[in-house]
Length: 511
Image 1 (cartoon, helix red, strand yellow):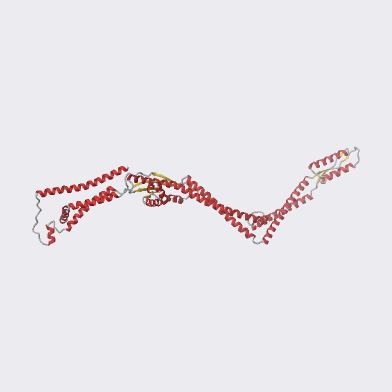
Image 2: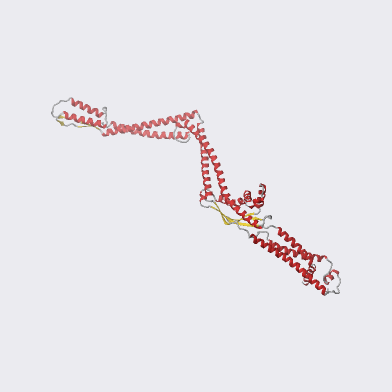
């Protein structure tokens, strides 16, 4: 331990003996280092925090999924640092004063991309940092420029996000409109082809579907008509049977009357009543009444009493049966006519198919083409309305909401370099360099500062050593040199302190 302590003392003594060399090297290193630090331009940074949130209510109901909203949030970084945006930043800030051509704008935008950082601090919360450290500008100009860059980025994103959405929606709607027009023309052609085919073949049979479907439907209807016709004919036969067994009129027995004129008047009254009901002269009851009236007219006159002829009245049951008979005949005739009509239609279609076997295939092809075109048209129409609604939701209800939490800050001190720290490190490096050079020079010399070191080096015993004896003049001379050395060291420290003061004064001027 004592040996190590002795070695340390020897090293310090060697450095002290060469203190002027150490001071000179320290001054050289310090001046050079401070010059380098002074040439480093200050870089000022402006920070802003923005919040990007997605609307979660209405967008879900119009097809804007969570993945779409997340892509909208991820687009923040890409939009903020895109080349087009950076070129707009160059043109919209004081950087435009430093460019003279489009190439200069591109170069400045490329350099600007390194000075912009977008960091996600939390979910949907982003920190935007814009830096400016142009050596040709003053600190105040760099601080102002960094804030301009950050503000311009935010403005461009807000405007570009809405405008980009509108442009994208407009292009999509334009494409869908073109496709709808093309599909509408194709659909009209397909409908016209189907109409021509239906006019040529399908008009023979009513209903919908293919020819086979219509024929099957017609045959089903014929089977139903056959059943109804059989029922109608059966009902008609039953009515005819009842009508044959029912008399057309009923006769009331005669009574003793004083003369014929009163009986003739009664028959005439019945004839008038029958005419009021709408009976014609060919009606059986009217014929019977007129015959009775004629017979009474040929009888003896006078006012003697006699038995009058019975009164004939229409049978209500017979009249009702005749009405039912007419109704059943009409129903049976209509069903028979409808059956004949449908059978004729079926025969016409079958004859057309026999003449042209490709009719069914042509109809299948036309129906298939029409169905495909109709489905495509309906889908494109629904997509267009969906895109239109989504665009309105995104532009009017802010599907992606962009809000500024902290506006761009006005930097008061440079973000880099940390000049006070660098100045201090240069001072320490200068002191270390001076001491190191002095120590190295001491190691290169062959003198021995102590008797023990001489004995180790020579391997011989050292009898004794003579200490240095200084005269008064020598002590005075050394005191003066010590003061000069202390002044040199103090001057180095003063320069360091002056540089620190200048740095803080410059920062205060920026603020």
